Length: 281
Image (cartoon, rainbow, N blue to C red):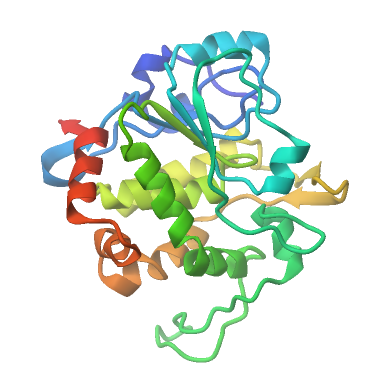
């Protein structure tokens, strides 16, 4: 993966754009999600929460760099078949690992949206605005991943809630969230957290689409073999995908905080999340 020269990891949360991508050998699409303006004049704390692709290619040199983050927790959002095929490597780093699959594995494919999209999950765009802004009959998807993002919005709430609660456990931070390449499942999970902290949707979207640069998805399609040995295409993320997910989560309940409360997060847990992940600007 080609990135710009990477500044000190401890400062990453205050940076923007491509400078936020951290150079850790064997870890793709790694960055600190800190530094964004949050609610009540606060900002997301740098050095507390990171996002990336899987650690299955982590090198010893990369582990030395990753050690600088001081990670206590790694939350793996992949399905069990993916983890069996490509387990994370730690090279002795003392973090605690937890698996919280965002999506179930589908027949002959996986919980990776790039490959699961071909399994045609039971999701539709019912209720999405039509060209006149009115809800109506299901619209034809403009992006191959639209039905999968609708599906994630409909079924991924419980695992995302479990992820938030894992971050609230004593000593869990700093933490790293990852899926296979850190763009779809990680993207929506991080978006929920940032939105709950009061980060503006434009900033959340900027962080989300940065995965295209972090994964080299700005030009020709990138092929990969899934855990079943099937050739797949890794699709770039698009702002419309995240907007669709947010409409079907926070949009249905008025705010991301209300959506999380609907899932079962208490007001005290939400207060604690803000306390842990934000600081005075």
